[in-house]
Amino acid sequence: MSAFTSGKKKNTKPCVMYLLRRGDPTMFETFWRGPIGESATLVIPGYQTMSYFSDVGNLCWFLEPGFEREVRRLHSLVGNAAVEGYHVLVGTGSSQLFQAALYALALPIADAPVSVVSTTPFYSMYPPLTDFLNSGLYRWAGDANAFDGNDYIEVICSPNNPDGSIREAVLKSKSGKDIHDLAYYWPQYTPITHMLAHDIMLFTVSKCTGHAGTRIGWALVKDKEVAQKMSKFMEQSTIGVSKDAQLRAAKVLGAVTDGYEHQLAAAAGGDANLLFHYARRKMAHRWCALRAAVAASGIFSLPNEVAGFCTFTKDTVTSNPAFAWLRCEKQEVEDLESFLRENKIITRSGTKFGADQKVVRISMVDTDEAFGIFVNRLATIK
Ligand code: PMP
Image (cartoon, rainbow, N blue to C red; front, side, top):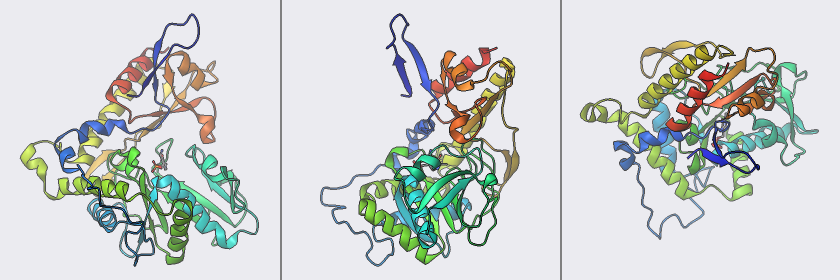
């Protein structure tokens, strides 16, 4: 339940405030409560998953073969990223893989800390994840467009968190390195237009299936040495990644692919077994409701709707970003986060993403209840 009761201050009535400032993908729970949820159920007997090792012959020796198989199967189904010739690495969420990639890319060039950059507005966790340990290998250097130099690590998030834009690297130096964060490159958020084949591509079950609590992400890495270094990072920081969590993630990803391959929908009717179809329809519905609320209020604006041909579903569809990047057009509202808080809507200010105070990020993937209350409140703000 994504609500808390704030009744701490004296003389204020308790009121329900909805935490739309996070990106907790609880919206997908309804799907997993449906018929396909059963096939994603996992029982692990007491004697299983006891060894540290999963596959001693693999450079990522803690990677469960069943998880790797399901990652490759899912990408082959959706066609969003190349898997042929790529090493698969597993991490405790893609957050750990992001840090592993920084370590692996910075290591050979780090006389001084390498600058880590991303185009504004950027995912608000990149700066703290980069600078948390005050590493001598790398440091956060802000907006990629303002960067001058040849050695850097550019993070490209596409579709972008917070604004949903489709992005490519802006820096082109031969000695620069790229990390492609593709957490949202799934059909429920955006049309799949290309099979991407970048050097380092990060994914996470958090945003793909909604299982954020399983804490499993994966990286597709072209270069063997980089993959080895990333694997070393996971080995040193946590001696691998939970096997139990990998087995669960494998089961969940497998259920998604099976849903399509077995065409269970034909038997059950509708899209109850087709995660991406189900989730896309729900996201589209929410975006429609949000645009109507923005129109009713008259003081906000959103990024323009973008459409494209999806090679996975073979139709032309609009993108439905996981976050709304909401701007206030009213001159006297300088700090939109505070303004919305006064109206009982909790959001995250643009300043956390390298942008200004007149814009905020709002989650589009929270529960139906939270989303419903949010759009109703927004529509009445004048
Ligand atoms: N990248 C982006 C762009 C994200 O939005 C998130 C989650 N908010 C992550 C990475 C981290 O995902 P995980 O839960 O796998 O650590």
